[in-house]
Structure formats: structure tokens, C-alpha cells
Image (cartoon, rainbow, N blue to C red; front, side, top):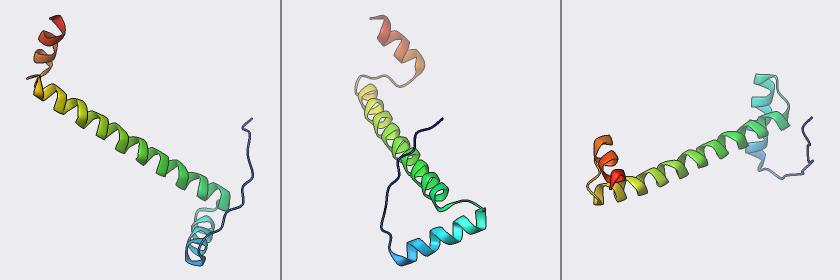
Length: 78
């Protein structure tokens, strides 16, 4: 069973109304809507971090002349 921690948050009126509307439309609790929103946000942040790391290492590889899988295999055999 998951452990839950109760939190109290404050929202601007328009955002609170949006969340209530979404919860009603989807037949979910406010808590479930907010949890899903946080999961999506976390996923997007991780994706952004992944692409930043990928971009960094791609640049490093290009600096060393590694442009293909074969280039990488040759480099790793050195």
C-alpha cells in the first residue's frame, strides 16, 4: 500500500476552477488530477534533462570525430 502525505495548497481562483472542472469531466478527485499533473511535469523535466545530456555527449563525440556507430566502435577499441 502506498503511503500518502496530506498537504494543503493555495491556488489562484482561475486555476482552482480549472482543476475542479477537469476533475468533474474526468470523474476524478481533485487530488488525482493534481497528482497526474505533477507526474506529467516530472516526466517532462526528466525528458528535458535527458535531451540536454544527450546533446552534451553528442557534441563531445563530434569533437572527437565520432559520427557513426562504427566510429564509436573504433574509438572504444583504442
